Amino acid sequence: MEPIRSDNIKTDALAEFVGQVLERQGLVIDNMFTMSGGAIQENWRLDYHCSSGAGSLVIRADAKTSVPGSHKKRREFEILSYAWKAGIKVPKPLALCENKDLIGQFFILMEYLPGTTDFEQIKSLINGETLGFELGAELARLHHLQPIELKFLEKAVANPVEDLIGRYRHFFDERDASNPVAEWAMRWCLVRQGNLPPLPEVLVHGDFRTANYLVTSEGFTGLLDWEFSGWGDPYSDLGWFTARCWRYGHETKPAGGIATRDSFYNGYSSVSGEDVDHNRVLFWEVMSLLRWLVIAIQQGDRNFIAGEKDLELGLTGIVRPPEIEMMLLEMTAPNYWPKTSND
Image (cartoon, rainbow, N blue to C red):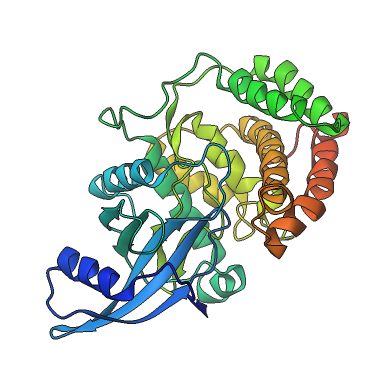
């Protein structure tokens, strides 16, 4: 973690706001640090003390530039509040601040949960198969929710695959350079999706992967980063978690790089009551790679075009697309299908 340094932060005014939210007099902010993760949003840890004790909170704010499809803070706060009230393991959202005078941007104030998002630390803290089962069960609980009061969420579409491919095609059509691999993969998905029976759309997390959940030695403690949540095919979350781009090179642990498919699938089935369709997961892994290809290019654009000037964003836009394209070519090769449950 690195200390926050910004002329936009009005520390006294922020301390007064936090004190009002917590109903504590004389609250003083001791430190603020950037937290790991948050490739699209920013997460800050805020340490404070007051007459009744000390503690930590999290400020979740917009980054300098954004990626299309990422929720604004009000919408993310409403989704997070709904999930917390429904019993999903998420940080409790405490307040939404739409006064830019405090830190220069809108933000969500929420509780600080114990745990780490770091992949190497997670592996050393807990048995991966146990964690994979826990995560599968939690994802199934999320997919059972029916948040009809979240009226701002886009309504379900007749064909989510065609809708997503249409958005990706529009993205690539607007760019000067052609992308033959993306064109091939989009065509492959459109042809193959006809073999998948339609499923009712559910509330999906939209970025369910290792690095977006917290873990202690006791297990999974919280699901983070809800800026892409909305209606979608439940298998879009399953495929995103198991996609090759989020395994950190651990191919024998395709479920987020931490577990076998069987553990993750069994956890999901323990709550959903239905077997996981492995081939449908594989299809959504291809869709996930297409989506990550688009996001990686967008991340690079934030650096090279939008002017955010961030080394990590720039490298993402340069290094990741060729890697993802190779994965797409491998997964859409005729000899890749079908695969066994643990491949």
